[in-house]
Length: 266
Image 1 (cartoon, rainbow, N blue to C red):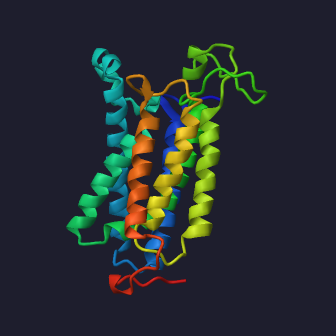
Image 2 (cartoon, rainbow, N blue to C red):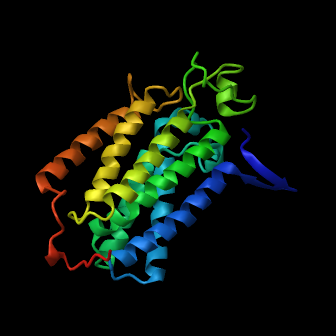
């Protein structure tokens, strides 16, 4: 486990950044495939612009969320605020920022927001899977000390190794990586081609991820806090309840309304 893949003079290629690049590249392929399958009227340039703006909004939102919950540190160290390569991107903030930018982009071009969220959901959770491997190599998003045989001792100098030197920890980033991969398989192979109402795939992504994150957060040692509560667990519960209510009220599992104008290709 080492955050740097290789160095060439002053240039460093870090696993954390590399995983983001891989996530964007692979996600772009999946999103393009889904846009074509659902016959959404977007050019390839439109899709790439949508992805790039959404990613930018997600990174900004993820960083702002993390900085706000660690304001005392970043107030004293303002130069660290843009240093995302040191870790510190909160997925809930990323979702808020990315969704907001995506909505504005799609609304301006009169493209169905909910149909696009269904195209994005499998790519998004697969990207999070890559991201958690980056966390593992970076030694952040780490767990509490454990006596379980799969506990991992992180190297000195890593975030986890500095906080808990020579101590086996729950590899929570690997727990979440496995959960995220499982969610991707469910969405891509189990639900993606069901002719359900727009937004159902995205809603299921949010529900499944919220449940998985709530469980994994129980083992985390570096959680952002809301008073005595873990912020990720509070947010996960709120989001899961809201989304479940939307699924039930809208009966989103029902077949897609043919009047929506979206033709689904098999």
